[in-house]
Length: 134
Image (cartoon, rainbow, N blue to C red; front, side, top):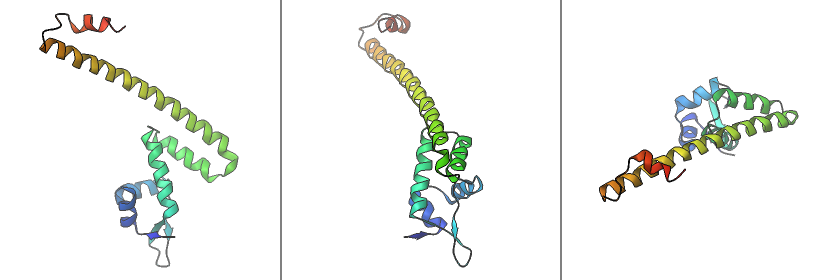
């Protein structure tokens, strides 16, 4: 198993050493210590940080990530709680995706409307144009 100094680990996972130290303070990751009391990380930590970054990518709040980490430390007896937490985050994330798709749809219509105005195809207002799609 590979051992990584904080700098090497930061490069490997695409984070800064500052961010890793912040994650340590938040107890999201606990580095191991060598015989000289220097922190190091291993391949399991690489996978763990990767998962944390996926959680962050879903929009999961830091407090929720901390809750997840705490539940994980308690073992398999918390699997149902962890699953419920992840389902809640998934539901919220999907709602945010749908909202963003709706906003992008309006932007696409606005671009099409501008194309029509530039090509002298549309004389109508944008609001009138949008009524075609409702």
